[in-house]
Image (cartoon, rainbow over all chains, first blue to last red; front, side, top):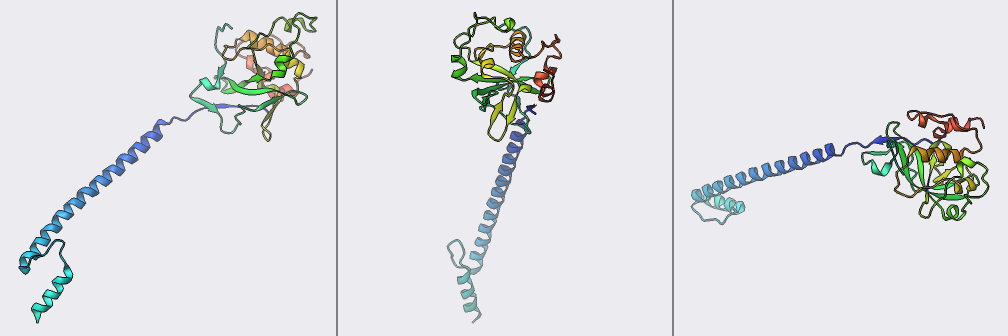
Length: 77
Length: 174
């Protein structure tokens, strides 16, 4: 039977809204992680300073932990 | 053409409507007459918004239909359907959806009950013209020339005629 029905198109704007929300969510997540990483870097630098003061040696940043171990052994002997 | 009340829309102009997902979009399909000759191509779908369905196929007719110019001043068999002249540029015709079958496999529209001559003798219109009820009546009379005249029907129930329902049209008494 030849019958062709028509129907209203489903609106597109809810999908656009969902996509926008996802993009905003991803951006906020990325932005939050960047801030946390920055804070961690700052804390690491402080620790590095502490080690340098204790050993009374001057190490180039980042700290070479292997050298630290050798030095500790030498002191023990 | 004048139009008092618009009851037909090209599907293209209704940006918030589309062909239902269960039904085929027949735009671009060939239209074949009773002898399986191609008489044109479906260019658009004419829909009635209240019924939410296609009621006519808007067919861009083939050159063979235009070239088979009937003589409008000759001796007409049916005087009431031969009182017009198809002018140059009038190369579209409407076909009621109930008078055709869909050949989904080969993407053809089969107008089994309408022959080439009837198509060529049917009043055409220029693409873009607004269609009115008078034109629809003329076209339906042309396609139904072998049948008894259809009783007058009011505007509200016009598309409940057999020509818009394949099942009823097939079983209609000639």
